[in-house]
Length: 501
Image (cartoon, rainbow, N blue to C red):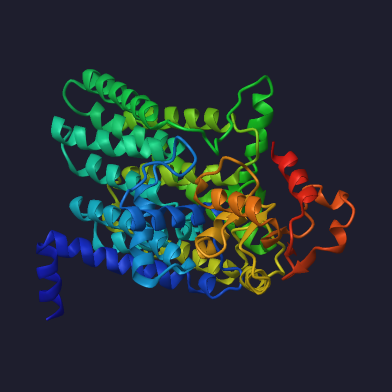
């Protein structure tokens, strides 16, 4: 009966797709249970902004294209799925996490559809999917609704591996790769290698290559020009100077943190020494296999070797332009290289004789369960519970009956506004924000009834308001991590405004 059921499912592509998504969705949740039940389980400011975009989408019906406050960062997919789960379970952090897991599950589904179309042995498919689910790089990252780039990349992988390079499929790949370019250019470089290799093995390849990438960049500049109205609240600074090699060397150590997930924006998060050693071993092993596949295919697949190395070079040059240390940038290298790795893997003639010994790899990856409760998505020490600290802040703010609050932490305003912005709006003192829906209300409230507006932030970061007489007698520490000032007096307000101007 079971085999008959599976046979019927296999003959119905839609059912097979939906069942695969469900299996991966449940699997993604199960392997992250230690993280979800950790007192470090939390969300960051970027996730909160997506949550606010989803709330706006539910309220207005308008689905934004870019991430609020910037002229790049395709965000419609995250916004849509976040809205779905907010509608389903309410305004909860879990809604955002489930949205991220569903996007990641869709990405994995397109990979397994590719393996199925290429007739990869079932045991080999199972091995590959277990390894990819357990890959440390996406263990935390996928929960933060940052798998859109992987999803778009996996759709491109499916199309370029299973479809002929005719004008119909080429047009679809052009559209999806344009969205990928807008979502994350550093991942796009590696997807472009797969696309170029796909086109290379078709008729009229030179014309197709020139037309494809020419239209790609024309579309990017055209859309950015049309949508780039209004002021920008956030932009990534890329600057090439004479010390380019120095900035590149600064980024190199981030490859380990980018692989194992112990990082947050511009810092590495401390992890156990044994897990760092294990991460180095795992990363080195995977990279060596990848290099072996690249070398092995140098005669039969010269084009993918050429295109991949070109993409890698562009990625590294791009990376060298970031002045601030950012281990998260390496995720694009691992995610993009994964797709090229799978392309090369499927070319191996010995793929049907897959050795059970290789199951040691996912078993070693499972050790990440024992450290996942130490992963964090915010600036904090490892001893502090994010959840308990924020609950303490919520209590003191609501007990004070404030009508609005300012904050000296730019990320906190989004976390607060996602959860409580409708009741008590929050602003970071800037006159231009990612969305001014909350900040305008805060400034109006301060103008009309300043005594009803408080201020909070990370403990010890007062933006020099503590230089003003009386300030240190009025603020109080809350929840080990925050401070709260019940009334933001005019002197304090003007000092904070001077800090942001």
